[in-house]
Image (cartoon, rainbow, N blue to C red; front, side, top):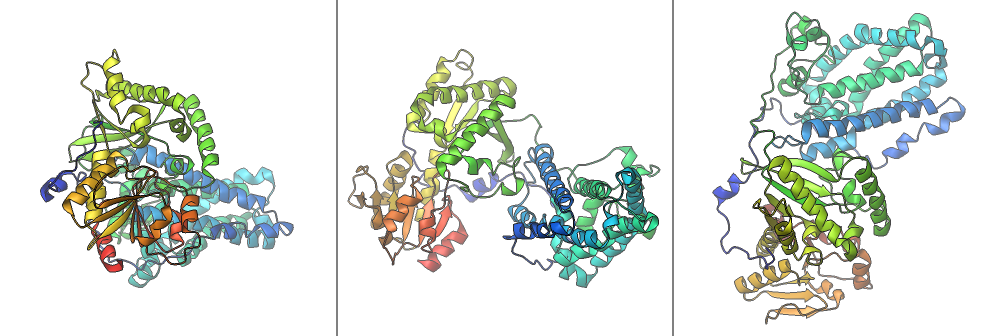
Amino acid sequence: MSLRPKIKEEASSTSSSSNASSMEVTKEKRTHTASAFWQRNTRYDWRLFVGPAPFFKLTPVWNIYAIAIARIVFMRVVLSLYYLFVDMENYVDKLKQDQLKREKHEYMTIYILHMYPQVGLQIALPSLFFADATDISSCLWEVFAAHVIFDEPLYYVAHRLLHTSFLMKAMHGLHHLSVQTLPTTSTVHSLFEHFIYAVTLSSVFFAPFLWQGCQHWVAIALYVITYDALHAWGNSSVLVRNALFTHQYSPLKYLLYTLAFHTGHQVFLDCNYSVFMPFWDYLFGTERAYEKKSPPMLPAKQQDLVFIAHNGGLGNFMTIPEVNLFQAYSPYRRYFPLRVEFYTIHVICHIMIRLFCDFYYGPRYCIARKHIGRMICLLRKPIDYMTPKRYDDLNQNMLESMRKEHRENGMRYFGLGNLNKMKLLNDGGVAMVQLIEQNAYLKDKNIRIWTGDTMTAASVYHQIASIPHLQEFYYIEAGGKIGTAVCEKLVRDFPTLKIRIFSRNSVLQHPNISHSTDLSEIIDYKIVLAGKILSNATYAKALQMKKIIRTRFLLDYTVPAIPVRALLQKDVQYIRGVTPDRSQQSLFARLL
């Protein structure tokens, strides 16, 4: 475990790699062609959000922002709950990256668009929003009654028309790009489709207003949040099999839709058009029963291995699904200077430890269709890994997590991730083995520890080896176990390959390996491999006054991988992580 990782001479067979794939799940076949997918620039949505503010002299705008912010916060809370209770343990049918990216950019559109009609209506018809506070209760009842009488049939008609061939391709297809729905899917529509639904929704407010001549914004706010909640319910993948919702003689079967009803619409497209009340589909014969089959799952309590990780700073914290599900696939992002981020996460971790838990539990994942793994994150700060006097506490934290997992799940296999295996902390895991042997509880439990160095070294080697016609490359800090293993195998397998290593020490002796302490030499190499994090300022200084550089690719396997702005500004292709990829190989062949 503490030895330098050895890279296998033979690549794994295709059949074995296929066995390592996650458990297969039968997908419902989509019955429609790919719709027109239009993209809009959401970068400046915040400017649209503040747009109503200048009208504060003509009408109160605080209530407009109160409604919009309440809806946004509500949906973000629902997304966090959705992850915790639906997606976290579902390792066979994870949300796709392109869907999360699409819904991240589109889900707020509806909240912003609804603010502008409200401004105009408050100016033109103030009594539509500012009735006497004593009328709120009656206004609320009338709004919900108007929904049943007007919005339900109008929505059914509009929705059914949107499924005609022309409108599906022009508008509604964007929504149906998501077959596996999540709460925000209900808000993802094209711009013109939002206006159509706004017209149907306006009947809910105008009908009571025309009836009694007044309406109150609080009643409207409560209605739209309830509307959002019911939409989120139907898109949340919560299976309902209770007879109250499914029995043919139960009124709720016709008055409140379920996941199966809405999923049937997403799959078949030509049925189940109602918004919340399936009554209209039963009336016009467009109801179609659908039962989503539960995917084959391993036992709920099964857990075969645990990967012990740690927090990487504020940017890392902002990508955990409980905080922001949309950022789950996003790269590490810096919001503030590193020192500020580290102290911020220092405070956050202290609060979490005192109020909630000692460890953060990530989602389960499946390996080779028969093993279940889980990631556990120590609630420690990056500063802890830079402070030697805290190393003993860090190792004891890892030991406690092993003790806890063995007591609760009989866990014997533990992986040490990132800085949890650094040499200064525990000598690549050797010290952890010694602590286990000395621990009264764990010493006879046959605990096994591994690190990711071998897999990382293999990935780095295969990525470099796959670059066509490579004659030389620049390696930043190759003195560690990974870098040494990679370089030794590369020069053995490719006798003509030249490697230039940036390091303060001469770590490897070989005729094809040379060393440098001048990072500015980076500009003379098309391929640069980063094995250690260097600050953007360090790169900027090395590139200072360099107008022409040959560098085309920066392959970065550091953790956390932070894009180097100084190189990106020079049009250098930044590749995060180094794993063999056919698309990258073709990119190398085209650009080198």
